[in-house]
Length: 384
Image 1 (cartoon, rainbow, N blue to C red):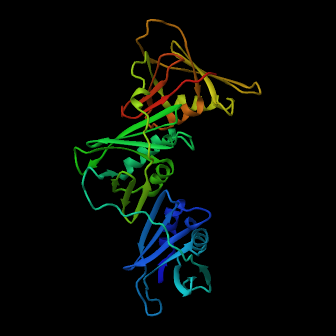
Image 2 (tube, rainbow, N blue to C red; image 1 turned 90 degrees about the vertical axis):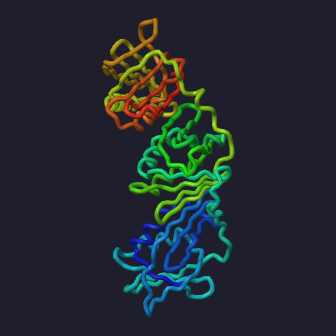
Image 3 (tube, rainbow, N blue to C red; image 1 turned 45 degrees about the vertical axis):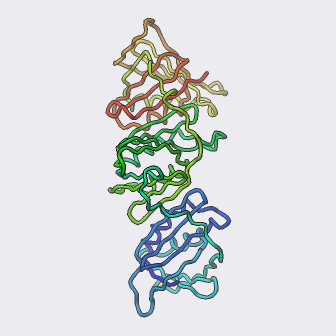
């Protein structure tokens, strides 16, 4: 194997896939392949696989391109590439046995990396079969999809024994994809338009947490469509010169229709930024472990109260003007809440005003966007 490529190209490639590598074992190596004047780098952790590709520099008499495959140590390879001076080209060629020589063209720099002599466990290729009973294919706008995943990912569980909560549920019927996450204490959901290959096809899958967190980073800022293929066990996403392959979580996601409250008595239109800044200030003195806070709604005001084990206390008030209630009773309503969860929920929105709906301290609160009713957050109450 022998190729030359610009530092900027190969550095961008490694940066985009490095998150899939592990610190030890075979997954601490990168698959480096040159074929048809194209360099492909593949990283994997066994659960998901990332690939990035770019054209190598044209052949020269002194540096001909030679096709080949090598497994190079990811951390060392990344460090050597990022340390290269800006504007230089990087040359990599086979030296002897499992040794590969890396050099910066035009400089007196020579580094020898030892490749791994082993089989790299690559994921299977995306199926060519378009049978809707075996796979579901759709395309979606990258920018909109990235924003949706960011908005919904905050409620995913992390290393929960209920493994099916450690990810995001994608459910589609026709041309609408519903994305939902919950950790048992809160829920986030949004819907997005997709273009399915078969209009009458549907699916319901759980995408792992790590994959969800990496997806928006990979295509952030891209103004193009993503192509997605879902099978019974895998997901394949391709965009430009990159792709991601991942295993699906095998399990049944909770029926979220039973979690989302439908008959709440009081609806308040909240000025989002004012509420969020007030909430953050009051949360400074909340208990560090529980983040517990009391919200008291009384007539046209809402009070924020928090305390901690050191007996520090915080008290804030703000006015609310637009209130609609179907309750026959009047008076104040006190709700205990995890301030961190509520901050996360309000932070998913960009609008100036948000609909905040509640009944009492024993029922969940519902947040909904005024401009996008499909974007909802449910926060369950807690004892404070």
